[in-house]
Length: 225
Image (cartoon, rainbow, N blue to C red; front, side):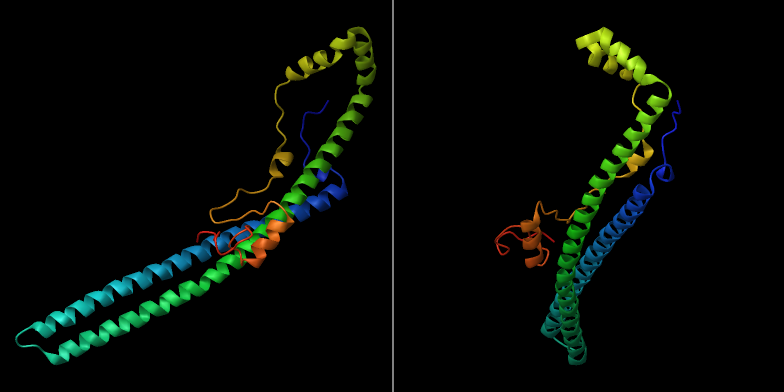
């Protein structure tokens, strides 16, 4: 009996087709993960720049005020520092507004991830079931070919109620058998910031909230950014 575990090409054309769809869907889902993480990082960078500019603006504001208190104040330098402070505040606000607007993009991607995960999960369940069905059929064919049914029938007739226990004891002697193809069919882990609706109602709430929450009151249950 062959101990080689099957690859995708060893299974039916139907399995191969569904397997290809699954791999493509999972790849698209993983890309959304990467896009979301990159978007969050960029927004955080903009917020950091805004904060740094605000700090620098406050320093410039303090600087010109100290200059103005000097006995021999240089009005030209004071004016330059005032202008620099104003410009820094304007730049900080620009970056802050950009970061705020990008929050909407975060929500859109969260919704896209939820829908993509839902699709990948459904395909994963169906594909794993199809794999098991086809693999069991293939193994049963091997057993019939090698005359195992006759041996099992005789063993069942002799063992009676102990039959199932004997089968389990015999199977355990082989130890765990890895199935690389089956192990490959899985849904990726959830990433920080991702929201996974439990049902269609929660999915609709997530869409209506702009990717913020699955709860009924989106104003009281905001998803942290």
